[in-house]
Image (cartoon, rainbow, N blue to C red; front, side):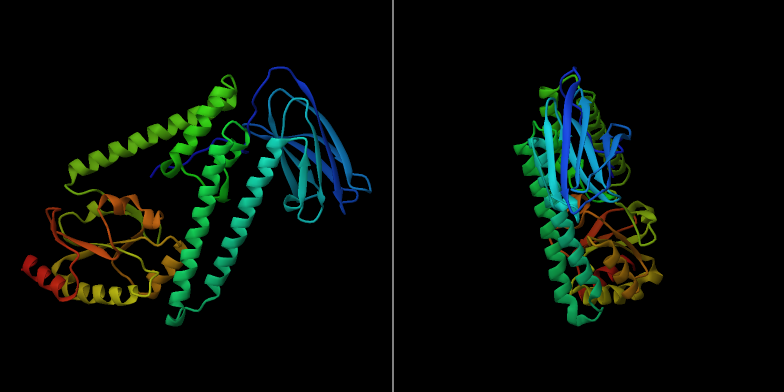
Length: 385
């Protein structure tokens, strides 16, 4: 698995000319009154408070600073409210809004790039709000069968919202590739652990931003930073291909290496030398309970003869998956691919429909495919005489 590693404590882009230029940032925040206001500069490796002031009773304040290149700043109003702007040479930026939920209720004049940041944050805030609402609806449902259809519909809505946000970010980058805001869009997150765009799935977006910034600002250290990141991505992809080639040369079948409910990584090849049912499924479907019951029946009949099951679940919701594993009392190897129905592993194994299975013999060869019920038992009886 290739991990996205960004060596930034903040998402920044410092681009452009070499001469320091005066920049003014004014604000008029309704209902703020007297508040402590901080101006933070977002650098590559740190966030620096470069100035502070206090707004007057009308919520007005003013900063004057200098930039060598277009620079990201946070304007922090009071203890919680923050506006992110991009300041460029000779700009007079004017911020206005209402103190309560300021990051959703503000406007920027004098900085087009800062308006793009506002748009990006507005879209992401809406997405996160919708996801939070779906998550609450899902967790409020009881575990009985009466809610299986509703659970399925919620998961479909979840995926639709996620994909809409991904497409929004990709389209934004294509339309605004020469803006520093495209860099900001590239590294936005759904939450602290999950980027909207990932190199494995959205490599084109990374290349677009890197090539555009290289053309516009070839001497910028931040252009070099994204170019270096792109190089890391390319190396990671190459290393993954090499690992797969090695795995496939040692074992006649493609390797699978995924975490189980305890977050222990278990490989398919660890069962080499035994009879295996390799199963691809979704636990969060109304049909899964019946399917798992059938698999349990087969497992009970053949486990003492040396049968093992390696089950790959394509459920995207980890919390739900963990609950269903426990609820179904699954006691064979059961792992989850976080890529869900977009699983590269499932593609490698040419999985067209869910559920699907392969029978693998001790020589690590496929000796049966997509057999269920009586046909599966008859095949195992023939193989395990």
